[in-house]
Picture 1 (cartoon, rainbow, N blue to C red):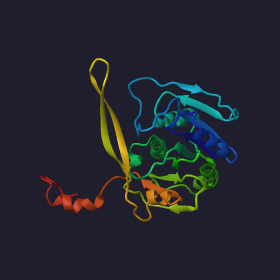
Picture 2 (tube, rainbow, N blue to C red):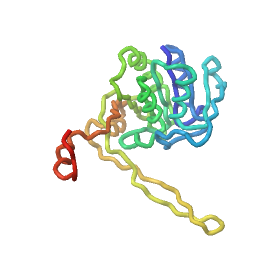
Picture 3 (spheres, rainbow, N blue to C red):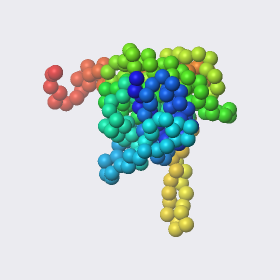
Picture 4 (cartoon, rainbow, N blue to C red):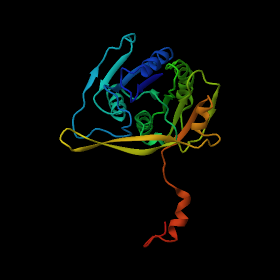
Length: 252
């Protein structure tokens, strides 16, 4: 089994290194990750400049082939597949911070798994909720070591990826969960530079309702949440309503 690992926290993040070490016990591992943090870049790709793909030695992981890319997580997956052949599974993470609800729309961690999915490769994203406790990636990494061989064996449906979020500390168990409405209430902070020219910080406060069986509620309650995400965004059930008022609509 060959596994391509990427992330959005960068190649030197402890999360990707713990994950790679665990998966190297059950798979041939290739790391291709951004050279610097790329959190929040979503599914962007680099098309206006060339990319650098550099072999990198990671302390404690000298036996694992690793490359850093001066681009986005999606870039990393594309280059990893192009340069080293199609893996059996693409895994992104382990991210520092959860990716719940609407987070998946801007998460670079999830985007790497989306890119793998669009390339026809079973793909997963792993994230760890942060809190006051010291970061402990071991539970997520050990579970990845058990789950990923099963994904490689059984595959995933077309256009489907698994978004896996772990709580702070040892999880009480693992549950399937639907996507929540977890998001951030935006706030804009304006400042002025020394020349009096304004600049802005985009900030936000997390908001979510504790809906039953959602990824947010599951993780807050101390469980690991697995959410299958589907890349067909078509709202097919709305077709009939649209047909009632869209001008010039032709019958299918």
